[in-house]
Image 1 (cartoon, rainbow, N blue to C red):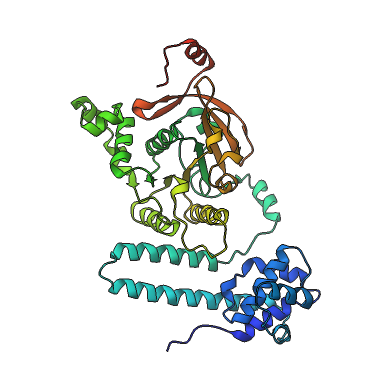
Image 2 (cartoon, rainbow, N blue to C red; image 1 turned 60 degrees about the vertical axis):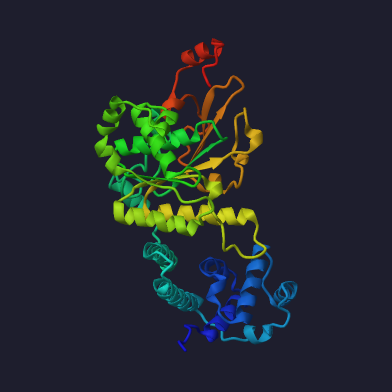
Length: 435
């Protein structure tokens, strides 16, 4: 029987230290570094969960509050005094490092067992096992990485050297293909941008345009749709490049001129990748897919449509749907930061946002993407059926709330900005330009 990496005395000692009077500062600094899985002993785990609950209510940690919380959570049998009598230490951060190290070893052992089991299962594709393992190893590595921090004096040093205050690497993660947006709200690197709209407004057309515009600027894109098939994705990309409607492309009704137009884009076509996992595919699988595409094909920008169709299994009993969506959004944040890529996420808006200017509160499934993203662009049609865009969020603070008059060329999956004079002429036209 293989021994499990653990240290019950370190668990008791850490809890005893953090629960003592005067340990508030240590508790505040170390609690974010810990998780429930750091505590293997059931009693220690129950006490840690009680500490988390009490801290969330901003109450004082003590014997009385701990005993009350343990009773409320159904753990009144825990011998609290035996745990709090553990040996106190002067540097509890050392114990934190010990416990997280043991947790990482347990995670590695579990991952090894999983790889061995799947490797023996002839029904599981080896590539799927590899992708899952890559994603899990990356998660463990992120969780175990230490950040030495920096002094504020680095600000003066950078300014004295006239250095720019931006992260190393490319300046942007992608291109909108709309000059105003590319200038005032560029798609960032290491953070993600959101396109929010009701169905049929033009969200997927912009999704397609961003992919192609970015490829034209030398950025390798990966388009992922949990709603469209690979054939539909390819038809949309071909429509943008050739000007042939999606309907004609699907029926094979296109000319040699269209083939020539797409053939002239050979260099661009070699840069792009596409995936179409089924709706309900969990984020862990999608993350593994993205990491594989980045590692093997050098993908630099990911476009994902749609957020609400990402599966959210594995959520603990009692957790809310909001928590589940939040966990996915947090995963996207971590992925973009870890890989240093651009990321554009398409989100649905609520039904009552139809025909009016939307807000961040109109996101249909969760407000987390709006909170976690760096840039949010909303699309909608006004009462005159004119397509509008608004920079709903821009983390650098510039041009927040700026509106754009847009035009959807549905036959070629293109969105462009139009001037007010063109808009005035179209409002006067009664023939129904937008069909």
